Length: 129
Length: 382
Image (tube, rainbow over all chains, first blue to last red; front, side):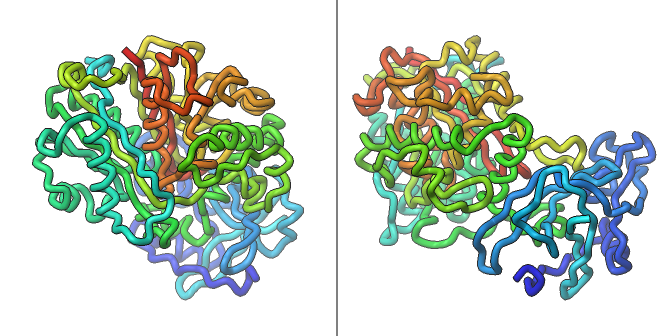
């Protein structure tokens, strides 16, 4: 069962510590570059687009839509749905779709973030909005 | 500076095994090296350049020592399954620059005997590792989006496997030799939507090797002459998640570079070795390389268009990774080997392309829907 699944605890590092601190508060952070204005995910200290070091944390609404997905029919922990979500703020990220009917997922479907516990900071997943 | 016409593939060897529980991985590397040297008519002492990737136990230093080589040039670039297509391009560069004159490239391993060690992860690890990306579901995500945007169907993808199976029936070493139908593919179990079991390649132990050399040495060896005339390489990833597009690969950059250097176009190609980890891999690469327009790959591969003697673009006439061999889960090496067989006129007579004087060997490595590299090699019979 997806919910019984044990997820690996993020190891964290100085560059991403603020992300995991926010995750503990149930907040999904992205990074935005104040030089070129572009948002990105996963977070880097230097913008992957313009290479400026003027990147700042921004709270995402945690809402977006399914860009694509694939339902893995069998695994040691049962079926699971991997996919990419395009956030309202722009960046797309890799995730799993949980707590929903995996057989009826559709590209374009609205989804929202949900955090799942680990032995460390919680991890962001998405469920049908 | 160009590599055009500077490097010749003088030796090829594909290990006949598909299951090797009784051999070590290093031993398989040595066996394929020996096979390629014998094919070229050279000896180990002649080798002055060596190329290997992540499948080589202990890396390039351990392999050079184990094989007993004395080299003045080496390269252990690892870009997954297309590493050997990258190595071929880099070997051509080294030969063109005079850094070595006889290069050996090896691939070998045993994923059928035992699980492969996990890939090393990068800065993305905390943000992706928990989501269970595997080859199946990552290529599945590409296929799902391609279907959504272009109306590509499972039937069209199935034709790629059908074509591979038509070729594999003549390859005595192929792991799967039965000819299959579109219905067989659609009726095989769903692995990761929308990819069925028969959309996936085989898992095999084994390996292969190449000898790459100068024009002067190649001409002295009394072998059919096959040379590199173009090479391109490129990488693609989600890159911060901006404008994510899983319907094309880095082949859109490596392909044109290779064609431009070679001075030929996709229309000129007589035979194509296209990496076939999954059926969708082939379809996307054919579009990206310009054999058809983006989104029209489904129509292009349907109705046997990839079957030698039937369609317009004979592909993977050894049966490819889908039916014959996918040693170490890395298909780039066998793509080059079958292209050289075709150019030499040494493919199986039932699948040999007539007057095959120009071929492409192309592949991607890594995970197509996440981070991957692509390498395109254009080869010519002289």
